[in-house]
Image 1 (tube, rainbow over the protein chains, first blue to last red):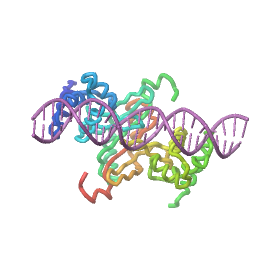
Image 2 (cartoon, rainbow over the protein chains, first blue to last red):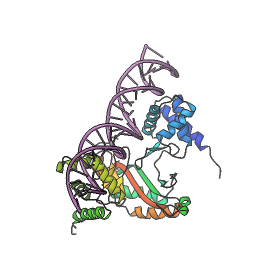
Image 3 (cartoon, each protein chain N blue to C red):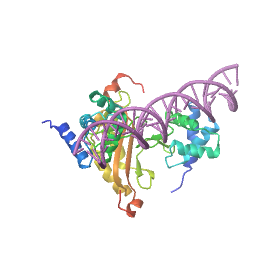
Image 4 (tube, rainbow over the protein chains, first blue to last red):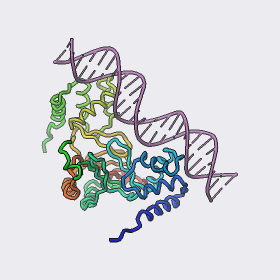
Length: 152
Length: 152
DNA sequence: ATACGTGCAAATACTTTGCAGGCTT
DNA sequence: AAGCCTGCAAAGTATTTGCACGTAT
C-alpha cells in the first residue's frame, strides 16, 4: 500500500486551477492553498488565518475570506456549514462528502459510506431534482469518548 | 386517506412539553408555538418574527430568539443550519430529517428517503460513533425550475 | 500602463445578552 | 411578594465591502 504524493499534487492542482481560471498566484494565495491542500482537519477561516500569518504576518483576514470565496467559486475547496459555528473548509477533497463530528472532543472526521452514493440516486429519482450539492453531517460521540463517561 | 388534525395536536404537544419543562406559556410563546407547529416551510427567525408581530406587534426579535433557544433545549423544534443563511426551524417535525433546497426558487422541502435510516445503521457500525444527530442537506434544482433556463 | 490583489477599516447582518419593568401566580 | 418573561438597546461575532496603494505583467 504505497503512499502517493497526494498533498503535493493537490497543491499543484489547486494552483493550476487558479491560474487557469485567470487568477494570480500571489504569495498570500500560495500559502493559503498550501494550507488547504495539506490540512485534513477542516479548518475554519480563523484557523486558516492563524496558520497563514505564521508565514506571512502581514496577511489580513479579508484576504483569507476573499481567497476562500475564490476557491469556492472554482470548486477547489469544499465548504462545510454546520450548526452556528464558522464554516469549515476542505481543500484536500473539494468534492462534497459526509462528515462526522464528535460533540465531546470536537473532532471532525471524514466518512466513507457505501450507502451514500446510492442515496444520491434515490434522491434524484424520487424528487426529480438535479442535485448539485449534498452534505451529510453527523454529530455523535466517538468511540474514544464514549467509554469515558456516560454523560451527555 | 383521512387528514389527521396534526397541527392542532402538534401545538398542544409543544405547549404541554413547554409547561412540563417548567416554562410558562405566555401570549408571545403561544403565537410562536402556533406558527412553528403549523408552518411546513422551515422559517428562519426573521420569518417567524414577521409572522408573530402580525398578531402581537409589540413582540421583539429577542423574544423569538429566546423562545427558539428554549424549544431547541426541550427538543420541540429542529434547527437546520446550512450554508451561510440564517438557521431554519422545523416545529412540525422536530426530529432531524433530510432536506432539499432549490437554489433557484429557494424552496426548502422535506425529504423522505428509504436509504436514510439504513445510513444511520451503517454509520454506527462502521465508525463506532453513537450518533446523536444526523443531517442530510441537499442543494439542487427542482423540477419546476429545471425546465425554465439551463443556467446555473 | 493597466488591472488585479492586498490591507485597513468601516459596514453589515445576525444573534445574544443585560437590565429594568410588568405580569402571573 | 417572588420569579419568570418581555422589550429595548447595547454588545458581540463573523463576514463582506470600499477604497487607496502596491505589484506584476
